[in-house]
Length: 298
Image: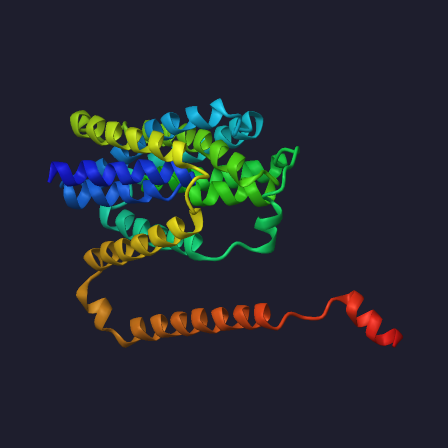
């Protein structure tokens, strides 16, 4: 079992180093279902692991100038406030509710990893020399930080798009900068949890060392492997884990209730319809305004 925990911890680190997020979402399930920890202890331990791993992965990115320090420090400062508040609030929320919220966060993470980049995200990969507006930093930082403090997720899948799309940072710089933000808010969330939770430091350090090694490997591989394929594969794996965690926490009667299947059916239908609509727009794009003007002149 220990070997399996170390192997998956390496995977967490590799994902964090390459993608700037995603891998940390697996830390809590590993600690709960493989290590047998209590939910709140697992969340607190996860925050320590994610924070230390993010700091380690940050070093190679900083060495090659893939970190926007001003934006990262501002974003991280607001995230720390939200994470500390979320950590203190988690003390009063039952563990089952936290795990259900975490499972929903896993599914949201998977959705963010599986969806195709929008045009705005593609444009954001061009070099930019402006920092994220302060009001966006404040709102995004507080919200993402609160999520981190509550459920123990690094929230990189929220930070990276915010830095890339809203701030106009190239994707490589957005990934590097997100690691600074994740580290800051993870340690702040941990501080909020420590008032009511004790940590098994032996296990925490074992998982952290494995994840740090993986993050250094991932940072070295960043840009050398097809990130889209890796993101999709990891996204589907997170979907499976999220459904598993959700199934473990919800009462069996919920899954047999007609309303549950009605909601799932409606969600699936909406997803399929949206996918076909986007595909039809890609296959049959609208004529540009210039083309329409040329037609009108004829």
